[in-house]
Image 1: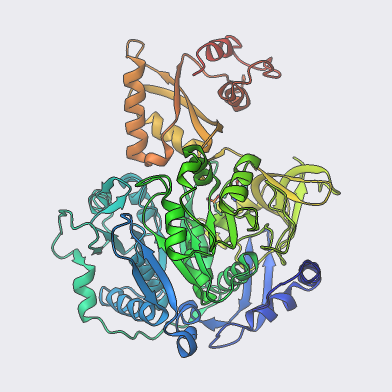
Image 2 (image 1 turned 60 degrees about the vertical axis):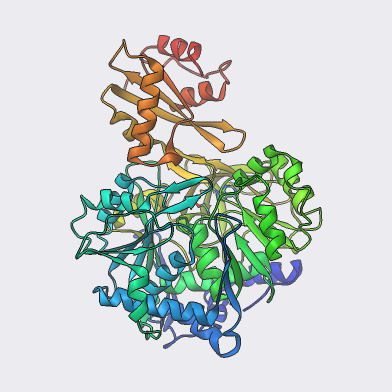
Length: 630
Ligand code: PRX
């Protein structure tokens, strides 16, 4: 694969990618295995939107992830699995073994009637079988929809219904630190309202007691015993969908972001190899869960396409103690570590005594993703983990972009703490003002847009193309709008400053304020609520909810507890508000619009200057909110 090895080469590749994107990407795409080459590299407009890459190219992504490596590297490790409990034996899967497991499971899916284009929901802990299930779908042309196993039954059923999944792949339970989570029970509850699901395949992980429904539920290990180890790859078109992944936006329920096979394949490998400067024999560890896009692109597809060896970790960074990450790094001699600022901050807060016992001398490169990294966390990571000798790549991207968009190339791009630095070749960022006018020059800030398509750009939101247009392509004419604010400093370095819409980023997880409000409003005693983000030392942002109750007499503590339970039930633990303030009214304009700016300022504790409140229906509300601030 075209590998950039110097800053000068980065600049020349970037120039080439902008001057002639078709030529640039077709050169890269040549390096994959195609059954039939594409007729045309790109067709696009952002009005529809309608973007197609490598038109009429035919191939299967799993042939590139697996079969392509077998002639020379069948015995190379694809994955080392480290369980939640440090005492549990590791699992090692070579490319050959992974190939066989994937083919076997693809045959199981076929046996249960899954055909090209069908949707398969995967709700699993971080075990190799989650990856195997994803690749098995891709092998037969089914579209996987992985749902993070921390989401509630209600969230899961909403996603299953929205994409009309036929099969659910899950496990009996999941270990996370001290917890043993009953995953299968969540699936059972979700499926009470999903009549379209005909089969559930259950991987045995915790051996906990589960109810198996005859005719619907079957065990993974039983099925795999008799399945064939070979499964011919389904021939896919570049623009056939590869997966759906739900993500929160500023309005309504989560959207099913759809990625297609060809462009996603080309971009994930290109970005993986260049950003992380992966070398054969390196062990790469991305600590994300496969339930998020980071897991899709940099645990599964990017590394496998590159023939890399990766680590999969089932547990959490703080169990049995806050040294777990570092113990794993030393144990397996991890060379490249890719994690989130929230984990870095949590481990930093635990103290250096958890880092000191470990050598960490195998580490070569460090990465960060998911949220802005504050300078303090960046420096702590740099000094205490990288020992000042490992370049840090602060990678900015999104579920919708499919792969890393703005990031240093490790060891090549000179870094600055908190800056994602420069766009990858092929990525054309642009800053605009509120009206969509381009903000030129350096030393400026604005809303971050992308003006030209890249291969792994979102193709649609499942079942509702208009929603995709409205969310990303309608704010500004002819631009993809990211929803992020961004600064370009005097040297042209990009720094992502955070969301400019009603999305909050809690521990690197995207949460729509409207979604949380809807969940809170389900409580019988709540008339109305408003949710905003506020700065949180560990999570980056915390969730602050203002709630109006109908029941004056109800104890506020009890109401808070019940609201938390409601949010857990409807969304899951990740969306639980950190603070719930019971208020008598919300600051509204005369037209009835909630002035979130004021609520944000109060939540932040910045009440001295609330700006213009003259348009408020009842300015007294603000005083009450200020005095009751938590
Ligand atoms: O606000 C940006 C933030 O995370 C959002 C995307 O979230 P999601 O789709 O869940 O994907 C996360 C993993 C790719 C962005 O709109 N974000 C992501 N990476 C960074 C970031 N903010 C600042 N710096 C980053 N490196």
